[in-house]
Image 1 (cartoon, one colour):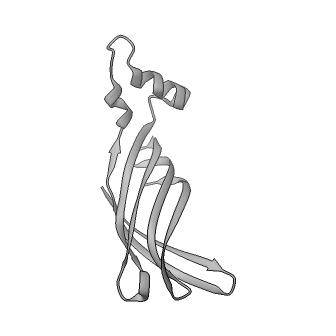
Image 2 (image 1 turned 135 degrees about the vertical axis):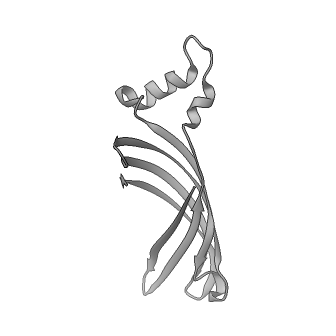
Length: 130
């Protein structure tokens, strides 16, 4: 479970809006391991080998949910919603250090050009986690 603060801006011709998001991010690590059958050659092991090759024993795949609030929300008087999900993989490198690769989808309520609305976003994230 993680709690995340994120700042982002939306820019359009002659207009700009800044968004502040605060959300929780529960994750399920090693979700592929649920396919640990048949005992002789588990399906999960085959999937790990196809997806991660020689790093299959180091990879920690995960799925996550996102839920929280965005300020300013629609109408600038209440927070907007933020919901979404993600799928990714973490490769531990050393104690407390890992390379993280994620694809994330979010949908959130925004106030843009004085109009309330919904926005959707696909993001590819990569980086080093401590």
